[in-house]
Each structure stands twice: as structure tokens, then as C-alpha cells.
Amino acid sequence: MSSSTIVIKAPSKRRNNPIYAHASEVFLVTPGDVITEDADYMRGHGTYTNAGDEDNKLYASVAGVVERINKLVCVKALKTRYNGEVGDVVVGRIKEVQQKRWKVETNSRLDSTLQISSVNLPGGELRRRSAADELTMREYLKEGDLISAEVQQVHNDGMLSLHTRSLRYGKLGQGCCVVVSPSLIKRRKNHIHNLPCGATTILANNGYIWISITSGDACNEGDGGFNVNKEPVPLEEREVVCRLKNCIQCLAKSSVMLYDTSVLYAYESSLQYQVKEIMSEKVSLEIVNQTISLLEREKTGDG
Amino acid sequence: MAGLELISDQGYRIDGRKPTELRQIRCRLGVFTQADGSSYVEQGNTKVLASIYGPHEPSSNMRSKISHDKCIINCEYSQASFSSAERKHRPRGDRKSLDMAAHIKQTFESCIHTTLYPRSQIDIFLQILQSDGSNYCACVNAATLAIVDAGIAMKDYVCACSASLAKGTTLVDINHVEESAGCAELSAAVMPKLNKIVYSELNGRLHEDEIGKVLDSVVLGCNDMFAVMERTVREHVEETVSNFTHS
Image (cartoon, rainbow over all chains, first blue to last red; front, side, top):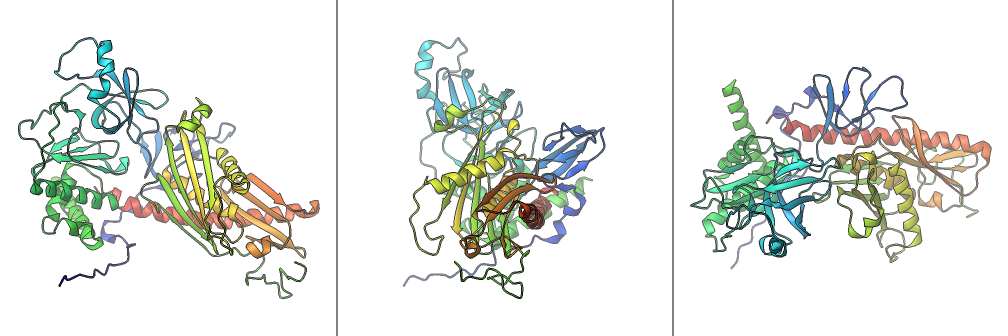
């Protein structure tokens, strides 16, 4: 009658392919390690000095890779909360509607704020925000809505102010949100990509990745999320979104940097499999290895 | 327990260890994907899961404690009902677990760089899956690994170990039987690279001449513990970095 298949998996913990291991070339530290005893170096993120010490030792405070830019020494942790910078693209969830502003959860240390004065109101008109606008804030964005935005300002306690004053940003409609570590997102000039497979991805700097179908009329400029399309999405398009989501999760699981090229290569190498097969340990590793070799080939081709 | 010999004439303990020997240690980092940092530690039969959430916006019941120059550390300790020999339902927030949570919180307040995270909150959740003595120590070790995994800045590792005294011999990393035999128990948490003691606690009575000796063996035990934790962290970091670098 119904045939059930038994899947026998390899051990979940596997050694990485040694061809790609470059760990010996980088300088790894763990908390409390002395990075340098040289007094000329400047203290960056992830390091500290003891005020009372006369020998000016520089210690690491997190586990990770030492990065040296001239005289500045930083330790980059592998996994942290998102540290915002001005101009970053973020995807966040509305947590609270307050007077004149929204509180947005952005995987950051503190909740970010979105002022009512830094959004484009429906209709795109530029005018002073009136009391009536404040009363209708919830009609535009309510608790639980997902938005894409840009970091406008970083306050000195680390809180972020966001703005959506461009039609590229705004409320997000139908799609899929994948959460990865913010350190996996490669900083690029552009974080919103219309991929040739018919989907748009927002690889936001805070590690929240939004995947949706590219809408026909608004190919380059979005509409600011005012008219959310609530039509049912056909199966083929949903499959594209799911495939992308699975690919991104595979790459994230193996800590491969995420940017348009790596996502696209992973998508291409996954095409020979069914969408659900991508999640299996074996296929996932296959796709990751293929992506890595494609990226390596491109790198050597450039140089 | 008068009849119980904690140390045999041949110099071995009840579970067959030598006096200065630790129990077998197994640890893993990053066991949960949802938490910011997580770890699993086994010290012999004592098994602990630790998870860290944060630094994040303070939850509503913590609003009153928000400070503008440092973060709040919130610690919750719980023991599974199946963790000890007899099955026992332990309601959340009984005195013993509140005490334990307060001690762990104090330990970590002194080693996390709290000033780097103003107006935030760090949650440390500890769950004992099996309890076989030295629960505090296993919890501290697990929490340290989880904090390292979460990428939260701290001065140094915190490693904890316990010791007891029987017939003039110090027993390091005591198990449940030794703990309940009624001898004094000294547990301490140290920062091994900076060579500082951050916490120490003495249960029971110990002659003051012997305290130094017991404390020395606790510190040695902590350093042994540290060697294992350091190796685990390095392996974990190396494995993650190996993929990071080439793309």
C-alpha cells in the first residue's frame, strides 16, 4: 500500500573537508589570552587592558580571530548580537507602538526605534506629521509586522535609530524570514538582490534574511510596502523561495559567508536535488562543498 | 555516616579515583541554535545544560533594575525532577535554587565586562539534568562556556572546582556520596589566566590550618578544569573559522 522509506544518516558531527581548512593561518585567541605586550597597539573591540597594570598588556575578552589594522587590534567573535553601523540595511519586527515611534526588534543589544518622522507615509507626500498621523500609526505598522529599514543613527548606548525614507524599504509582505548569525553576512554595497531565479532577497546586516518573490512592476524600486499583495502565491514560486531558504540554511550551518554570489551558487548547485532533499545532512554538505569550490574558482580566476 | 570510608587504605576514593583526580569531563559548545550561547557539561555523572540569552532589551519585570552604565545579569537555576536518585518535583524558585542562582550571578558579575553593555540584560539559564555532587562547579563551568559561545566580553574564563577533607587528605571534585558524608566542602571559582579567586564557599567546618591546603588543591583542580575547557573552545573556534576564511 503505502511505501515508507527509511533514511540512514551519517553521524551528525563530521569533520570538515581538510582542503578548505585554513585555520592554521589565522591567530585565534580565547578570553584572558595576552594578545600583545607591546604598548604601541591600540585597544579595539574584544580586547581590554588592566588599568592598574604597568606593563600595558593587551588581553582578549572574547574567543575569536585577531584582526590587526595598522596599530588597532580587534578580536572578532564568531557569534554575537548585531552591532549596528550607520547605513546598514536591517530587517526587523515591530515590537511596540509608542508615541511618535515604533520599537523594532533587530537582533541588536537594545531595541531599535523607528520615528514617525523617518517613515514615508502612504501616498508619499512630504509634510509635517500631525496628531492625526500619530493616532493612525497602528494602521500603517502594527505589532508583529516585519519591516526592512536602514540604520540612520547609532546612539552612544548602542541603540539604533532606523529610517525607511526610500521606497526600497518599508513593510514586508509575503515571503520567508531566515535568521542567521550577523557575522555571516558579508558587507557589500548592495544588500537587496533581485536574483535571476525570480526571487528577491534582503541579506540584512543584522542576520535576518528576507526572501520573497520579485514583484513584476516594482523590479528596481519597491513601493514602500503600502500595498501588500495578499494574492495566493503559486506553487512554483513558493518552491523557489523554499529552495533559497534551505540553501541559505545549509550555508549558514557550515558558516559560509552569505552574499549574492554564494547564495546564487548554492541555489544553482541545489537544482539537481528536490527541495526537501536539501535539508538532509549529506546533500547539504554536497551543496556547501560545491559552492565553496565555485567561489574558490572565481577567486583564482580574478587573480 | 560513620561506617563509610571515604578513602581506602590503599589511597583510593569510593569511586576509584585518586585524591587529586577529577571526574571525567565532557563538554560541548553551541548545543542550541535559538539561544545566543549554549553549552553542555558533564563532570562524571553531574550533567548541566547552560544557555545564554542576550545582551538584550531588559524584560518588563527587570525594568526597575536598569542601570545606565552596566548590564543586569539574570540567572536562573533549576534541577530536573529526574536529576537525583529519588524522583522529586522541584518547584521553580525554592530557596536552594534561588541561593545557587544568586551565587552564580555574583560569580559572573565580577568577570563579565558589564560596562560594555549599558541598559541591557544577560540571562543565564542553567538546568541540571543529573545531579551527582559539585553542582555549583559544573554550573559555573557550563555558564562560562556558554558565555564564550555567546561572544560576550569577559576578563577570563571562570573555572570552578570543589574539595573536601578526609583523614587529612584533600579530595578534589567531590561526588554526591562524598558530599553527603558530612565532611566540610570548599568550592571556589577562579580566573586561571589572571590567577584570581572570584568566589569561594565553605560548607561545614574546617580547621584553619587546613584551609590553605584544601584551597591550594581546589585551585589546582580549577586549572585542570581550565585546560579541558580551553581545548574545547579552541577546537570549536577552529572548526567554525575554517569555513569563514575562504569566502
